[in-house]
Image (cartoon, rainbow, N blue to C red; front, side):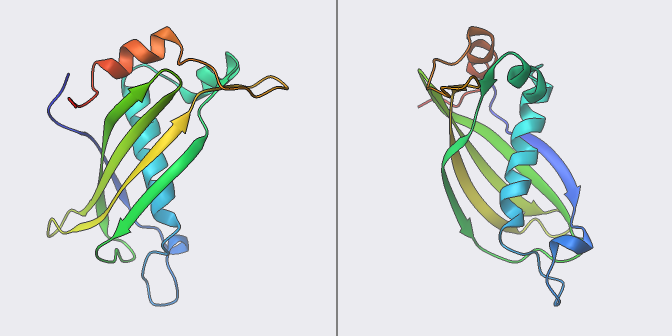
Length: 141
């Protein structure tokens, strides 16, 4: 178990902003995904390998709260945590900060279901290797 969240830094790109240079709200979901996949990669859990093994993790629930705007060329820090695991799902939490002033811009959480990627796409238990790796970083209840 770890007390600190996984951290990923990124820079806001021009194509992620509107005409006023403000990040479009939908792009924060992509930042969440970057944080989540980076956390998993750092745990030795490649999304690509997971999918090639026949397992997918689609988002089934997402929550987001906007607190302040990010602007073109801002350096951001995406903090990602594993909040909870169930037999066939995992919940991640996110906080996005602007690095220069430490402002909290966005908070959120996503719940991902574990499914088979065969024709049925049925819900299945989290694979044991995935469960074990995530248990190392899941926050205490």
